[in-house]
Image (cartoon, rainbow, N blue to C red; front, side):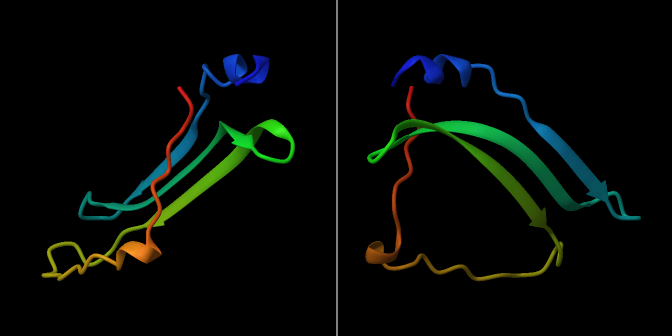
Length: 78
């Protein structure tokens, strides 16, 4: 990666977390930038926002892995 990658070495994450009356996490929100390589334009910075809502604490769940052709490995530059 080019010189922009060095700028991404220091990550700044803005985050918030909401707790319910039972003190369990109900929502997590985060905003941050990551560096990536775009085949068309070279080094890029991507602004990411995660907004995760959590509910059903203690419920029994069954999770089935998706078929391999519906998954992708994401790797970030070192």
